[in-house]
Amino acid sequence: MKAVLDLPAAHIRALEVILGRIPAQEVLWVLTGSAGLRLQGVDIPVNDLDLQGDAESVYIIEQRLVEFVHTPVHTWESERTHSLDGRAEMEGVEVELIGDIAKRGADGEWGPATDLRRRIFIDWRGMNVPVLPLEIEAEAYSAMGRVEKAGIIRAAIKPDEDGQRE
Figure 1 (tube, rainbow, N blue to C red):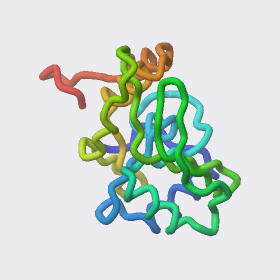
Figure 2 (figure 1 turned 180 degrees about the vertical axis):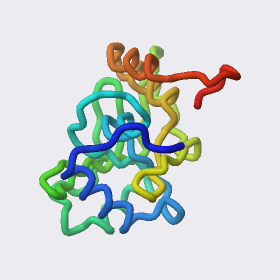
Figure 3 (figure 1 turned 90 degrees about the vertical axis):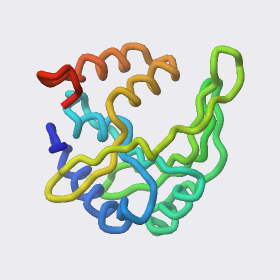
């Protein structure tokens, strides 16, 4: 799929560095959050860059971006979400490093971590950017209680003439 919308200039520079240092063919990760949504056509402002991996990948990402890391990867938990979390800054852009993100179900139990093997690739400026399909992103935002954002994402999902997503 071709990128639909682009990113602000500082985000472009930071993402180009990330893609050069962390090829998705070598490391299992995805660009999520506002930047990943925007590349898929969700017309929202971009704040930071969210790089999501599994437990192994998030530490590889941290090592490959080590000179930009200001908060090392550590365990993080909120009422609805549990993950590994670290922070970096590149080109003045906050970069969140997220690993093994799981959501708490209505029964109070933690669900499985997001299956990143369901990722798709966006052709952006001649590079392949790994992202999660909008359907998965909408489910994730709903699970986090961010119903309005989930609705915006769902509204951006456009079926093709066969009723399938483009």
